[in-house]
Length: 137
Image (cartoon, rainbow, N blue to C red):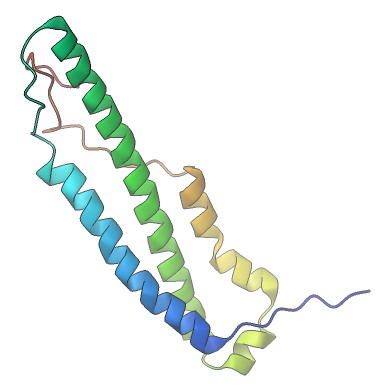
């Protein structure tokens, strides 16, 4: 029977957590830009049929990118929260190394959930983009 254990460097985990703080701010800024700064910026393509088709495709792509950015934000937030909880619970390298791998995996489970898209991403519905014909996209 093999022993199931894990060894984690407390300092490396702290450094990773600190780096996640920066990435969290980046992801929040990305979502903020996509959902506020770019919402009412319709491509100025005119009213021809092809222009309307292109505008519709633009907003479809925009919605997809907002959903992806929200999944990224959810994943980084989950990793940041999980590493913060691990660091708070296990204050020394020895305590962290004595933690079960299953306990650590459970604390990090939210990251996989967020990355797989199992949680609904929020895409603004009201006040969102409009096609060139004044209709919601």
